[in-house]
Image (cartoon, rainbow, N blue to C red):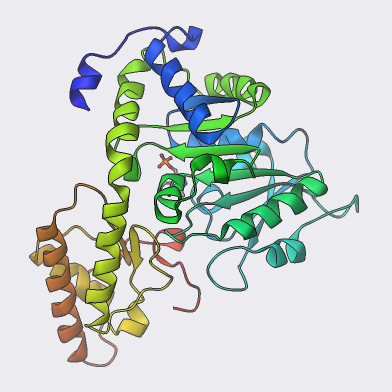
Length: 347
Ligand SMILES: Cc1ncc(COP(=O)(O)O)c(C=O)c1O
């Protein structure tokens, strides 16, 4: 990847003159089955612009899961950049949104008290969990029948595809815009990409420039993204297998996840696992494992040794927690909040 970056083309992508960037965008359009694509500096930029291209003038609202990154962790971007109200929905199954949830909370019609739903945003995967394809299809059909656009926060659509066997295009055909990250699981140093129709991408290019995201020597970044796509993505299945094995090993210690482990995340259910999180974080330091909160994230560079160290830290934390005096509060506290650590409101 570093070699590719060192040898990158140096065309000016603000004028769409960088061949690697153009090639990368074409490859994403091909993989997603969309007409066009545009490189973004981050997943946040891809999401915010992806939603923004569907919205004109308020009052309007975006319906999404209450844990969705686009709503909970993008610095109130929907309010600031799109002047959008948000309907954050708690899925009835506690795991992923269904058409039933959408129908219950969608705002239709022209009652002047309301901000009608103009975009439904689905995060795939959400907390590493797969949403069944039939559910995506049903939500998309309902949305389109009601003149609502559907955006996919597909930061981890790569994982969804690797785990489910569906292609990116199988997923993307149900969406009007799809934002994906090339950092995170794909391992590039920077960036994301937004795919959609030609006219939406044209508008997105304008908005990206407005937000300071017009990158001149973009080839340095898209050459790395290309390597991520070709070399890291194919390893994702193995990472998922490691997460599954971790789940089995932790179950033997009485440690259970908050939500299903479908891909690369294991969210520790500290309550049900009888683990004091502060104690676990102290143990992780001892065993040289970097953990911030309940979310364990695996990726292609995490060694088997690191996973063994993590398991040893968790085993110690379980033992120590058993003997803690009632009301014990550790000096170390998890950094997590909302979507990064609490994926199940009941755990
Ligand atoms: C689901 C999801 N969407 C979007 C983003 C935003 O990506 P970035 O950090 O590149 O802005 C993240 C980041 O963690 C994410 O988890």
